Length: 152
Image (tube, rainbow, N blue to C red):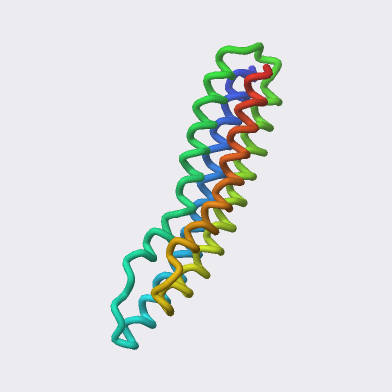
């Protein structure tokens, strides 16, 4: 027998898992750029800036947002009419995808930040600003899904 509550909870798992995939991909891309930038610094006998680690870690916050959605969707699945399972499942999948794209693109932008900062040693705050704008997309997705969850 199918448990509709479990299917609704699967939406929470999807939000977490999909956002984590995006975070992993984004951090991987940024990490590759950081390693390459550090290598260039070592070859040129320049100090390797530790700040590149901040850029590499930026996409990881989307996993936290996915975890928040996972908990909210899972709790909602237990508390509401089981016939809402499809809404909860889709909310998790769509929310997770939105956060994953944000994390992936943040990683790509962070790769450029690594290259620019390692080369010049300047613009750290400006680079963080760009990553913050991309981060805002994930925050919007999380908030909009939470608002949608409140409607059921």
